Length: 402
Image 1 (cartoon, rainbow, N blue to C red):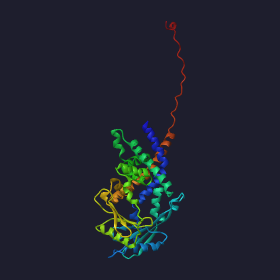
Image 2: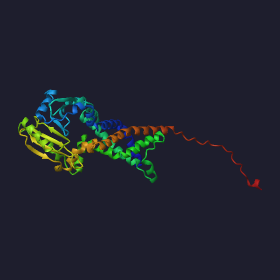
Image 3: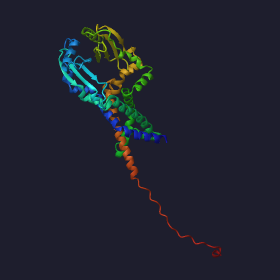
Image 4: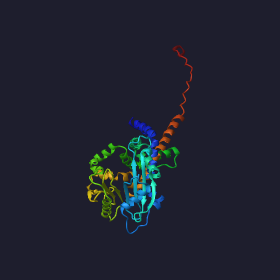
């Protein structure tokens, strides 16, 4: 009885959310290698010839700003750890008051400007709003709908997908020893319906853990209660990251302060880093901040936070990897777990395979459902037995026997 209920829910919830799961899974598999593919398609923008000396960060920012106009304020720069890559300046603003159904109307502007840090020359300007990989990401996260609507639809479908994954394992789990030998192999030489069943169940079993991990980490961007729940489960609180939203307007930022802060961040990690996200002071917050990713010894994605006085360049606050709580370490790593980037290309490949399998599950599941419906309709009714009339036996009396 329990399995019958689970099968009913597994089947119909899969049909209801199948299209969304298919779209989210395919776009997710594309986005896993987004940075690597962007470099392949735009080498003239990304790569530069290393020079002897870096231009001042304010001069580089000014060059980037001039290329897109003063109305699109640049607020962050991504500094690569490799000396043969350009600095990537980003200008982004979202309209929080937008009531449009589509997320495109929420985005006021989003540009990335690549600048050669040794010459100050702009190597390329990318309008991210229409750039392929960013469109893929928006489809993946919110189906190109307004964030609150799209995130809710994608998040709810992902929650249901988690339930489908778990019930699928329960329904598939072999109960007899003889079944164990049959359940772990796709029978390619069998009839196509059997092959389709194995692709749905056997392949789904092998990718279950990775798919489950990808889904659970993805829900962080849809539901605050989910994110807070993971913090609590790890014995931490989201309040541990309160420093991320701290503001300081008691002074006015200066170019000299920004230069000193930038130089300090580079000097602290001159032995090597993967990337520094350097946030410029704004009208609402005069602090400058450096978020530094580096290859560290922990199993997490190692990163440090450094905040500076935007007027003087003095260090105001430092949060090192070892000083973070478990919740904060997880939150800084969540994106890399979700995309498979946590341990480089081997885990990225696993993430792509798992995402493509997740995309196939609704398809093979619907084929199974249609096949079973047809099978029921094709089963002929059992013929009824015709009643045979027999003559009653003559009654034998005692006289006749005598």
